[in-house]
Length: 147
Image (cartoon, rainbow, N blue to C red):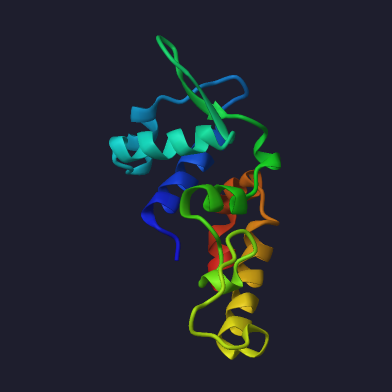
């Protein structure tokens, strides 16, 4: 499940994707425009900066911007930075695999097999959707909701 940190991080990244090239966004402005608590947004942006997805400039005229073009950042990258692995359970994870203590044969475990399918479906969507494409979805929201 996507946490508030993940949701707010995605909203902030979509905001940054809408900036003109070379422009910087102030944290307070992003927080206000996206209904995100400023202190929480500061923490989120720090994690995104440490992961190399955004950069910041301090001082007068400072703020945040994407570290690379929104076409080169996937939604999956953002979610993993902020919320961790996409898999619903550790034994189904690619990036943070951990065997279950209570499973005798994970190759035949029906729960794991279903969770691997779920993880693969989620990863297929999030890893094949760029931040630029996510931003563009807003204009197409109505037709998508009726599908």
